[in-house]
Image (cartoon, rainbow, N blue to C red; front, side, top):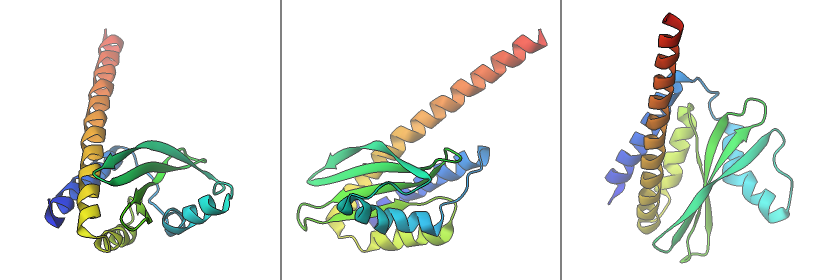
Length: 164
């Protein structure tokens, strides 16, 4: 896989986000939220500080792809219970570094920053990330469509009950 494959996978990811937002409008990721996930969260963890006020992080799981580890978390706004953005923490055993990546939504300036940060990654970790995010996207999209179908069935059943 190459950058074209990654681009296709991420395009599908953002398309699914846009599709889901068609039915439920959410507040776009803010620059403050983006900066918190890409910089502030690391400082918080390393310093033992409390969670950012007004938010919580939900653990979405982790996966090892080759030698790379990826942790996925959602930043959730306490006030609206909406997902503000997705945090990906990628660990490279070669460099020993942790990379903090924010996947924003609804804010094209921040989406461009996300793309720029991916361009800084070396080919191997980018390929592993592409495999990881493709797996997540496929699973989540299938789940989203199953829930959508279930909801439509419930609505149709309720309509039939009301009409009879």
